[in-house]
Length: 210
Ligand SMILES: C[S@@+](CC[C@H](N)C(=O)[O-])C[C@H]1O[C@@H](n2cnc3c(N)ncnc32)[C@H](O)[C@@H]1O
Image (cartoon, rainbow, N blue to C red; front, side):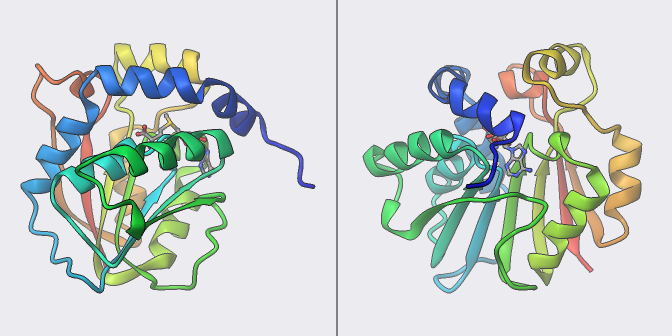
């Protein structure tokens, strides 16, 4: 059996508490509102990946925005986080759990063929990996012209506190844009409204694969 990484062990331990925090602070509603505002060009044949899904908050937001692709995949290193995600998908009335698969895996070595996905969502995950390798791997499995909704932790006071609590490293906006341009066109930037708690730690880059 492969040895668990520190990150996996950490998220396996905190999955329930982390999920509770996310439920209280309205992340799901904020993500759903943003996704609803996009012209995502998805249909019943589309495949969607939530890369580093944790306990599934972004996939839940995607579902409550009304999107019903052929299949969504929630992928994460942490088995316990995926277990919590699975339970939530099954009991949530706005979610079609039958079309969501939870897969344990690493964003640096995704178990999917090149150009598989019509959309990738990723929130607070590339902070754990070298940005270039992470974006390259996401670009590999995304179809040309398809979108990546990248929701990184923004460099800020709250971001610095989270870096210590969650043991990750934020990437600067300039670096993120510079590296992203190797595979993507940057087609949107979004700042969450300040009255939404997600705005204190996250921003969004909307990227389109070249
Ligand atoms: C801050 S949490 C974010 C979870 C979720 N995207 C959200 O917004 O609530 C970071 C997640 O990234 C996962 N993670 C970290 N490194 C990873 C990797 N190399 N591959 C897959 N998942 C990873 C962790 O297990 C954890 O669930």
